[in-house]
Length: 493
Ligand code: F6P
Image 1: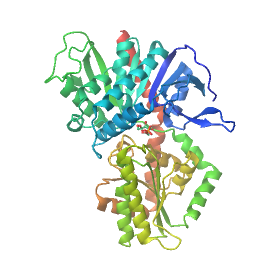
Image 2: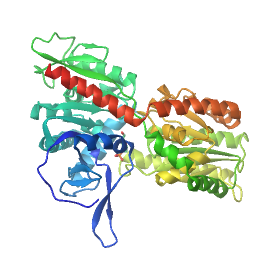
Image 3: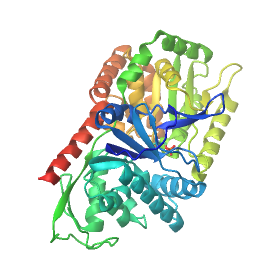
Image 4: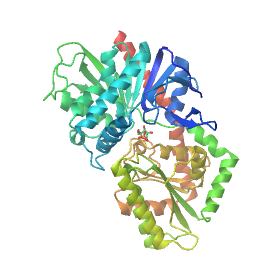
């Protein structure tokens, strides 16, 4: 876990994401060190990175930190420094105030600023340069997420020997929305630099293929896109289908629904100390009959306001009784300098304050609200204590919280209410599926979940657990890397 000096080593597998999977901590003696952040992605990729000799390229998470590449847990980490300006324009601006709302059905209005786009291009170029330097001849490079959509094309130009995969962790919007983006053609061209482009849902892959047809005119057929090796019209929208004259390459664009390492949650939940903590949480909440639980990054895509509204109406109508039922909402701080996130915090906290102000009794409140992040152990205790898990995303690439809840419920108990607009709903069809915009439906779902007979709870949870355990994150990464291996074999034919 200590920082080591750089070498010119090269690696056969390079993963690239906006953030490195580490957090910087300051030791008691004042020296800086790194700890692994507990994301599912790093857990999934660790074995394959060890087997292939892997490097991970990403931003270390703070402005203006210049760190030499270092080893953490057998993986070479290659930091890409970002200045305060880069963070403001590339990360907070273009990534999270332009692309994020655009890709999530314009729930908030995307803001289009040319200087943010310039910063996005320049940071994508720097990530590309860092990868090009550490990737060995013929290496496999796996690029992650919407912050880095230009990297596949830039990398193919710099290093045509590489096999390049891209995975989009968030939704890809329908063309009618995507086409708002002033730089839409550049983004599509950027992604088409990859050999394999992965999406969460089939609908996302279909949306992308439509954008390709509408903007570049390339033929697409069942997830295979025919892309000219030399783009004769870079940056230009092409009207109508084109027939490539020169050599073409085939790009695969299809769904690879991501998951979690289910065994981690299962094992934690079976630990006596975590079960004791779950009992303690219930006792600390005043021993309610029903705990309803929501945990999200504080993001406007998560529908936190919708769920508070539905729950608040149930309280106001006397359909749930304060003290008998409590809604525990964990809203972890996120992107706090981006304006819509600041506004959301005010809105949510006003709603919570009003509801609690109006209906709390001495000793009991309708909502227990935490604007905090908790370690995985504490989250698992919450999952075990939660009789009803409420996931009301208005749009979500996947929603791993839903899968974590299921993985934790080794007792086959608990009820998951899940939004149809979360990618997870394609797989977790035995949840109680809801349209979170329909407040009446949401209220009925909450009441139904609270009263669901034990037999039905168990039967549903068993089926949900089978899905989550059969399709875990290791399977996801293996399938993606196998598709990349096929692409490489086809290219070498
Ligand atoms: O895919 C969504 C995502 O960008 C993840 O990569 C990340 O873990 C999460 O949202 C939080 O985002 P941020 O890095 O902006 O805090």
